[in-house]
Amino acid sequence: MEIKLFNNLTRQKEIFQPITQNEVKFYSCGPTTYDFLHVGNARALVVGDLIHRVLMALGYKVNFVRNYTDVDDKIIERANEMKADAIEYAARFVKECEQDMNSLAMLPATHTPKVSETIPEIISMIEELIKNGFGYVVDGEVLYHVPKFKDYGKLSKVQLESLQHGIRVEVDGHKKHPSDFVLWKPAKVGEPSWDSPWGKGRPGWHIECSAMAKKWLGKTIDIHHGGVDLQFPHHENEIAQSEAANGCLFCKVWAHNEFLNFGSIKMSKSLGNVVTIRKFVETYSGAILRHILLSVHYRSKLDWTEESISKAITEMERIHEFVILLNKSKASSQEDLEEVKKISESFESIRTELANDFNIPGALGHFFGVIKDFNRQIKMGVSSQYLNEVIKCVELVKLSTGLIHDHPEKILSELNHARKNLTGSTDGQNELEIQMLVEERKEARSSKNWARSDEIRNRLNELGVSVKDNPDGSVSWSYK
Ligand code: AMP
Ligand code: ZN
Image (cartoon, rainbow, N blue to C red; front, top):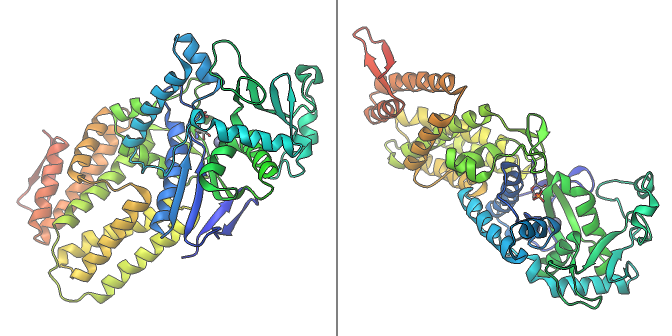
């Protein structure tokens, strides 16, 4: 199947052609591990997982590398404040991050390298850069000379001249050019350090991703992903390093996810407007967070609101109530070819949306159409072919999005609990759902689908609602 991806390098959608047929070399910039991650970080992680899953679901073998930055100024600063060893401190937050990723139903990456375990490869890449005339040494520090790399700016479209403008030269007296960046920093007291040809020290930030991508994926990779804030300077510098060291193209397709915003401002640790993944999972659930994060296309901004939580809960209930009903359903009709065709067309439409730059909202739109069709058809009886086509859609959405979970009953009770914890808009939302359920129960009863009608009554019970069937055929409901 043809996949179209938006490539930030060319700023257009392109047909994806991997270097090796049916295989994808995919790198995503992972977290810096010095604190609990917030739901904005979760967006970047879940989008990385989504790219991995969709490519797999569309038949590719994906070699997926996502790093941990476990050597960094912020980690060292925080560890020193806590009187802890920086590497051990970072290792603790790698574990916390793994716990968060599990709660978000993320599949494991193929490799999850750490800076502290990649030092020899980093050093040899810096040596290569010095040999090729791109790196230079000043007092134990190694710097990358940006003007030497003629393609600098090809991703972010920044102009070197404009970068120079307004920068006071005396600030960075040891640099040949104000845009030159650090490849290797000399060791300071109280910091982790390693031996190198330039004395004891540690890597700068950007070099780790160039070295890890090369180590695990080779010199040229297919797709590189990260948050949109990483485009410049991080990804621009990765290109400059890798292409100058390896003498060939670094990456074919660059994908960047947009921000998760809180009141139109980026959610960010430094601004203090964060909700941690841990806190959200405790109050609601990881499955709900995943649903919110994937309900908006990865290249659109996502506004964090209570309404987005409430909407996710409603959609998830719809999906998992459908799965419960599907699991119990048995074929009872011999032939419904037209209906089967409709579902198999929906399956193709879901695949097409997935292959259209990971358009999850589009794919879910078709999937909800399948649910609607199924809920109607099941009352009249369906064939085994029909059920098989529906199951194919479920399996596709499950693998590619991770939005359909095992143990749907457990998910429903989690959702119920989450709704109780949601304030403000909750009541209106609840009533909307109750109204929909009451209507659906009426339909179920009139088509003598007693099993469904009982299920709905139980669900209403969980929501604290009792229903009364009046002698004139109308139904009234009230809170118990
Ligand atoms: P950091 O720990 O700040 O280096 O961020 C780790 C990853 O999370 C990077 O890919 C960032 O681009 C991404 N990120 C941080 N904040 C947000 C946000 N509010 N929305 C989306 N992605 C974010
Ligand atoms: Zn990176």
